[in-house]
Image 1 (cartoon, protein in one colour):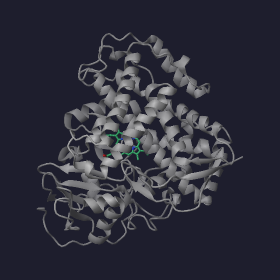
Image 2 (cartoon, rainbow, N blue to C red; image 1 turned 90 degrees about the horizontal axis):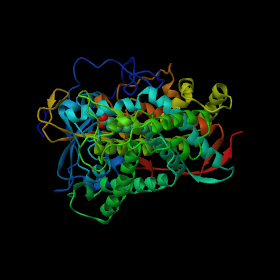
Image 3 (cartoon, protein in one colour; image 1 turned 60 degrees about the vertical axis):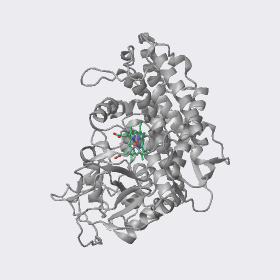
Image 4 (tube, rainbow, N blue to C red; image 1 turned 135 degrees about the vertical axis):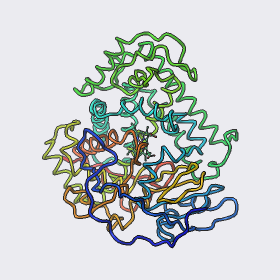
Length: 537
Ligand code: HEM
């Protein structure tokens, strides 16, 4: 690697005091999630990479990385320093640990780095959506999709979030043992399908959910093994399962698109449970728009690139309606294939991430009765037993801090990587084109320089008047820069409303023992997290 060689010195001191900033918000919600930080320094922090572990011929560090990626990345940081070169299979890699380098990488990504599109299996699920696009195509898609999750929309989705949690709480019984992740995934799955497709799909929800779980499992398996380097034409048993699952997803999503365009969705009539004020309002919008919807005018679903002729029929307040109604600067709608790719991406990116975060939140709360008691006090004071609404989000700072601290300790997305383009620089040094540049939420969030006693669950770290300071992008569960998570607000509001709804009704007594995380596509508990339900009232 030709990067200016200079003596490397690991920064050991604590950061200076810095002013508030939040890379995820940028808008209407006031965010106690804001990270105290200071404006970017005028000059970049010089990059002084040192060579990391040598690894084996051809495969480099793939075995060590594949066995335990989290431990491997922390070892890179602790044993070698803030910028380490290493190899993963045939790929040259550079691992960054310092928040200033991470900030520089995240904020120059669109200009200087390529999206890492190495995971064939992942692409089968998301297609060419905003997640894997770049340049002009990414800008167009981001511009079209972003409005579907802006604060006004998140407000409209909030009743469905609360109602979905209530459905689960109604089913829960004192003394019953639950698989926490399974329960959280059911809720977030229901939410994402309702907010995406504006409806409770009943049996289809289960079929779609199952197909998505299979797809996610195969993608996770491929991520850590040789599947990462297998060409797309190789058909392993896992890949065959994946393709079958994707076919189910495609058929169902295209059917929904077709139905929507034909104005055949009778949302109100199909609602499974509903009935609560908020949800009725949301569903009313769907139903109203459905009955006003214009019939589709052609067989666009299934076509790869033709704009859908009926695509202007969806002005309803769900994600699908908004995707169908979206127009780019030239007035062009998304094609049916593009709508499918964005909808499936929002779905894939939007449910398992949040359910994983919630699972970890219950785990941490289980081990911290004090934090739980403080949350109970807050819920009692603010809600007094009524269900939370979108407007309560800002009134629940401690619950927000619990979510924030959970995302620090167990960030569902545990790494971000991108490939350097010709001319890319970091810290003033040129990065050879093709180098895979990595940073990891897992290792940076647990760096004692930015978070004293890093393994401790301490939501009070995020108190508005906390003495500790955190540099920009020392906490970055949603990434950062222009490509920051599109659903960050959605996820934060969803996590707080779900915790608040369920905690008002139940305690989740977690079985004793430590649950270790497993890094696959997301950072999930390596073993099932079981809890016994105990009524909160
Ligand atoms: C706790 C929950 C979530 C976490 C931890 C999370 C994390 C992330 C991260 C780390 C990225 C990559 C950012 C980057 O490369 O800098 C990302 C991108 C993205 N996320 Fe999320 N996410 C969450 C929830 C959601 C939700 C609820 C949605 C949709 C409703 C969503 C939609 C997306 C999309 C579309 C992108 C691609 C953005 C782009 O490339 O321009 N995410 N997310």
